[in-house]
Length: 157
Image (tube, rainbow, N blue to C red; front, side, top):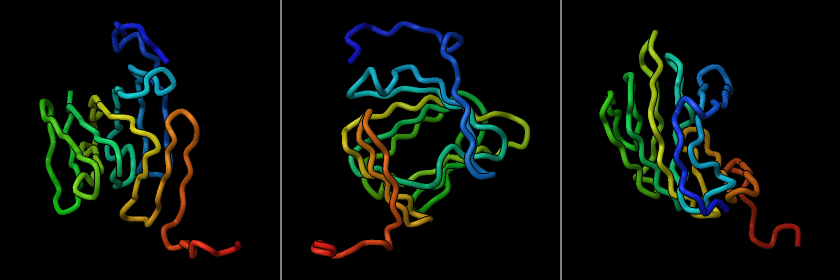
């Protein structure tokens, strides 16, 4: 646990590149590393043209907030699609009403935003398009399951 004030510059934070299947890719710059902070997670994301960072999801116990620094995109929510641009702020509450997926709609510019998250643990993440559930224990583990594989409480006992 870090008990020191963080004073840094985005240019001093090494970006971590991740890409999944074809439509998911990002570079993340962690301001507060998950291993160092137990209640607040802050990072900058750079999403390449026509990509998303993550699939559409919501968190059962954590709030996410985005501030769009540059670029343009669309945020898919539970019921809508919201156009986003530089200067926009989005706050996604816990639960299904906070469902979101951010997509860079530009074919030439990166979409850059800062992400502020609470880090209540464990958290349960529901991936609404694929029927997956993620269980995230802060700094310990992440597990993902298909929702349709549910079993009875006493199954196998």
